[in-house]
Image 1 (cartoon, rainbow, N blue to C red):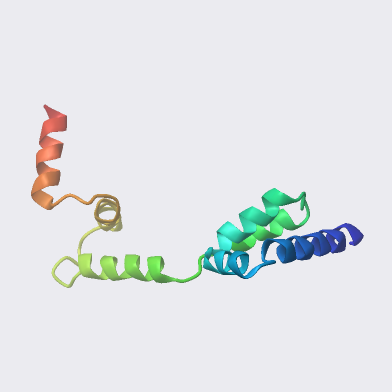
Image 2 (image 1 turned 30 degrees about the vertical axis):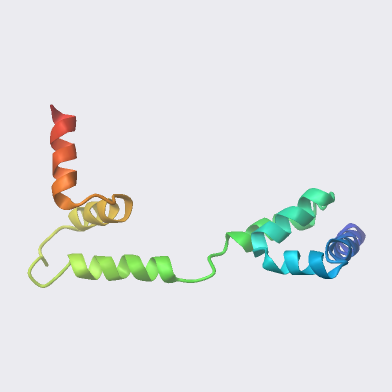
Length: 115
């Protein structure tokens, strides 16, 4: 526990040093959270804090992506297409999310690959 306290003190003093003058403070405030954490973790050996920071930064900041996928799924799985298997809808979602081609462009690309 003492090591973690020492690392917190080190990080706090490093943060003071990085934001000493008004220009440095403004530059620091313009950076994103991940950039700030990377800069602090690279400047000092904070082996106990690093795993916590990596876990916290891996948590999504919003549910926007999941909501977008559910919205796309709702648009694909309409009353007219309610007998489609989950596998077909899954494949359509994968193509929709990972391909920025139009339907005709995708069709042409598939035909070229098969020949």
